Length: 92
Image 1 (cartoon, rainbow, N blue to C red):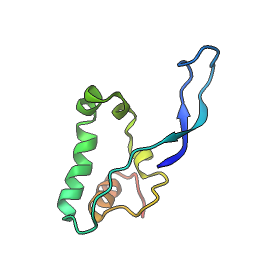
Image 2: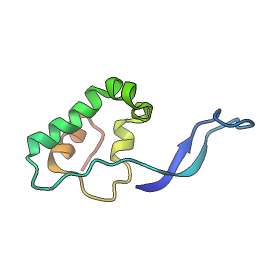
Image 3: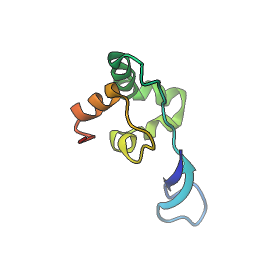
């Protein structure tokens, strides 16, 4: 997904504060027919194993419940939606 993402201060000389820039967000897309339990478990494991994911790919350190539920262009799978509701991140 292309959108506005924060660029933290520091990576470039002269930057003293965070700024908003155009960027690409990641999304995990699955078929609606996927079993609810599997979609739930996939979503749960992404958050439970975030440190291990970040060790393999540093961008995974930015994964958060708030960012995961913000601005999705498509509806959440029922299993992912249940995970986000149980964690209080998504109210729908």
